[in-house]
Length: 73
Image 1 (cartoon, rainbow, N blue to C red):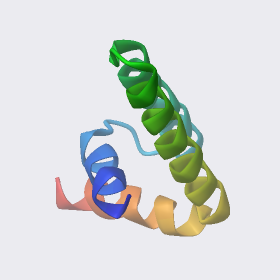
Image 2: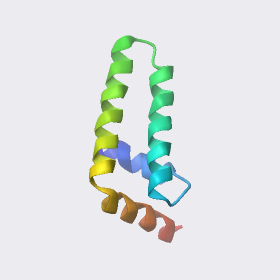
Image 3: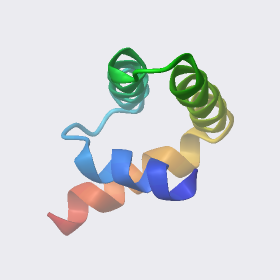
Image 4: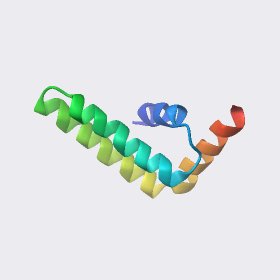
């Protein structure tokens, strides 16, 4: 999950926590819609739930990661 989250942080073009949360939701929703089988869809739904749960539980960590990314650009 950490690798997937790092990819999402690096691809995110904004800097606000709430916008990042929406970005994550819709990015994974696209994966769910593109999945062919019900098994794959369920896999992405579980990933989305765990990542959203992590983001909501750790807002400071996520905000720091977004700021670090912004400072390195």
